[in-house]
Each structure stands twice: as C-alpha cells, then as structure tokens.
Image (tube, rainbow, N blue to C red; front, side, top):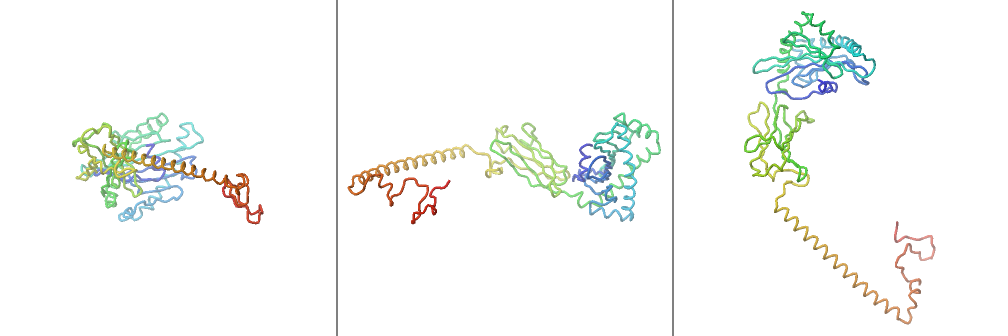
Length: 393
C-alpha cells in the first residue's frame, strides 16, 4: 500500500491490465503538513489507468480519460453528484487524520491517511474479488474482510474503530453489497466505455544488446501493451534460470512498456543456436522468438560485440604492422636529422675559415644575422615599441 500511496499522490496511473481480470480502485488520501499539495485527493483507476480525480483545491470531480464522458449517458448528473460526494468526504477525512494523530500521540509533522477500496472481476469465470482497507503513514491500520464480514486491526490504535464497526451490522451489509454487487457492475460499464484503449494489445520490438564484450547479452523488448507480459531465455526450448537476470517492467512515455532479461555469456559453451529469447504477451497466441545470433547483437562500439578468434587475430596483426610502420618512420626521421646536423656543421666550419666573414660572435650580433632563439623582432626603424613576438607564451 505504501508504494501505491505515492503513485496516487503523484496522480500517476500505471497503465496495463491482465487479459481477462479487470479492476476498479479508489484511493482517498488526506494529508497533514504537506506544503503545496491538496489536503484531500480522490483518484479512481480502472485496470490501473486513472479515470477519475477530485481534490480539495479544485473542489470538483473530473474525468481523466476521454471515454469517461460516456458515464453521463445513463446518469446526467454523475459529475455533480461525485463533486458533492467529494466535498462531504473531504470533511470526514479531515477529521480522520486528526483522530489518527491523536491515537498515535502525534502533533506536528507530515502525515498521510489513506482509504483504498475496490473490486476485481474475471470476465471469463465471472468471479469477483474485493478489497477495503485503511492506511496511515504508509502502513495498514484497518482492513474489512467482506467474506467474514469483520474488520481486522493490525495495530492497537485501530481497535476502537474495529469494535465500533463490527457492531454496526447495517454498515457491514451496505459495505459488502457495494464491494460485491455495485462495484463490479460499474467496473463492467467502465471497461465497456474504455474498450478501445483498455483492451488493446500492442506487440514490441525485440533487440539483443550488449554494453561491452564482457557484458551479458540483454534481450530487450519495448513498445508492448498491456504490461501482462513475460520475457525469458531458453535453451533447446526449455526455460533457463541460471546466469539469467530479469529486469522490471518499466513504462514508456507513450503509455506502452519495456522490459529486459540478461544472459551471462560465460554459461554459453555450446552451439549458440540452441539459445533463444521468448516474449509472451497475455492474450496473444503467438510468441516473439529471437535467436541468440552473434551478428544480430547491437553494441556501443559496432554491430556485434561478440568477437571470433579470427577477428581477434586480424586485430593483433594490424596492430603489429602499424607499430612496425611507426618505428620505421621514427628511424628515418632520426637519420635525416643526423645527416642535416653533420652537413650544417661542415658548412659553418667553412664559413668561419673565410677571410672576410669576421668572428662567429660578430656574425651573430650583426644587423643582418638571425639569432637561433628570438623572443621578438625589432622594426626597421629600430624602435622597441613595434615589436612582434615570434614565440608567444
């Protein structure tokens, strides 16, 4: 209930439903000490898709799906009635959260009181199930067992309420009638209203992915709906569990879902063709089977991350040849530099022996000579204010 509470507080409906089992749920949430958040919220979900909303800020009940507009066909004042119900329940839950704080000896701080109820209906067998429970700060405090027509209090702070409700036979009868009769009837209506979206099926695209050459191969399926799906690895047609890691089903931005299952390649010691990844969507007969094929694995560095011994040998040969070429170029460069230095020294020696050349120092300091290292060059006027650096820091 703790996880569902935060989902509802954020106003997020988790899309998806089983093929033949449908559900209708309502969450009433009162909060205390939560800044910038309504003090009371009602969220309604059909097959985990949000279709109803009320909060103490807007003070109006509103549809969250286009198909919910059909609800007024048989009850024109449906939204006005639900708005009035929200206003009245808001006051009751304001009192509930204060009572709970007193029972738990609390004053300030952030606190959440939530009531969740609803039903499930199997459209093949007609079987009905129901749930009705209260929670406080993320923990169950009171549950109504409609089969035994009794209340269960897992915490001592709720015993007073349990005894009071257990003795109210009219309240119990009305509560059970709603959960087992009225709720399923409305659920059937809502499923019929939203049939085009609630009962749709979408098959995914399936890919084989690998991060590095030593990473597991991930079989990744994305774009499927609903979320009642499985993804497994098989060997010779039999599901394998060792060296297999299953990921969670995650929502996509478009309302579809994605999931993945990893296979550790260290366990693949036989013919790869014996392995395959199988995607199964509830209600769809044909599975999507993807063979473990080296050439089909997509990676961050190329088409396939599985390298054969021949490919590794070719890579090593290329590296050796490239290194040999680089070494040869370095040796040639060294020889050229040595020859150049030798010839330059011979030319300088001949110049020094010339009778009109002057001393080496005089040549270096003369106006027409060029220093070996020069920070700046002086302009033709001799002014030091027009220097242009040859080497800049």
